[in-house]
Length: 334
Image (cartoon, rainbow, N blue to C red; front, top):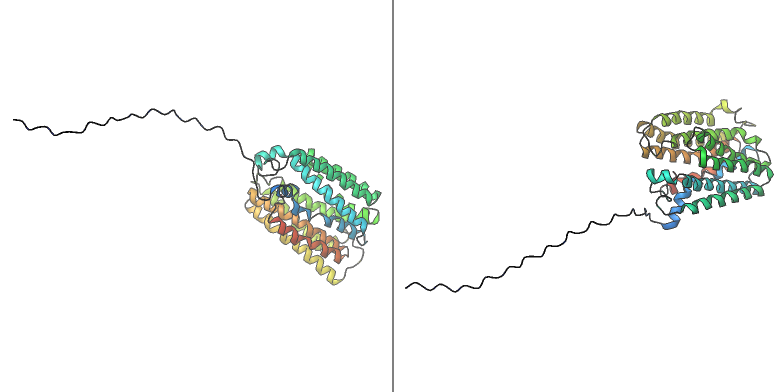
């Protein structure tokens, strides 16, 4: 007899999984606006480039010093007018460049969506009007300088910036701003023509470098600026420029020492970043040189005031430099 087969458990039925539909492709992602800590206040600080604002009062103060008159209420009105017109130029600059910045600087307030273009344009218009009103309060001579200054600012931002005339227009705006201080303080800009030329030359140098700050790649502009900064340092300290700057009388030794120290501060602030940008013309180092040149404007203003025989005005102007440098660590000047 054959042995009985062992009992086996019935085979379990295997269930075949139903085929799942292929997942749908994710919807195209929309670019998110760039966000930066600080909210709207931070965005407007970047738009108006607040650290650069400390370079403005020295224009009117140097103009008053060149006129040989102590700063007074009209000088303060000129300072207020300068601040408004300068910030109008900053807002208008970003409004005009919003398309270009969307490609090269998407983090800027307008292309990132943190500030509306209409708001920036409205701020530029309002600040321009306020600047002209303040200049009118300082007298007709001041308004006669502030009006072409405002026209120069708008012409630069809207049409001249990317032309060969752009750096010249920017330099003219700085020179006019210094003349505004003299016109408001003493009623005529003539005594400040020579110092305004020196300040305009420095501004021209910085502007020529800034034209390559987004792309970099050229050592020509930093090298030329380095030579110009060296010449300007000599102009602020050398005896041969006494006639050019119209020094009315010999200055005492402490005033000469102060002027020399301020000129040395200018060179130390500006020439070293220029040398770095010349050796490695990257966008980062070029932008750093431009920022240093903007801050070095304060040293030029202070040295001009010291040469004009106004050491108190020179020291008050120079005191703005540490504030500008400290704020520049948080908000870019370019």
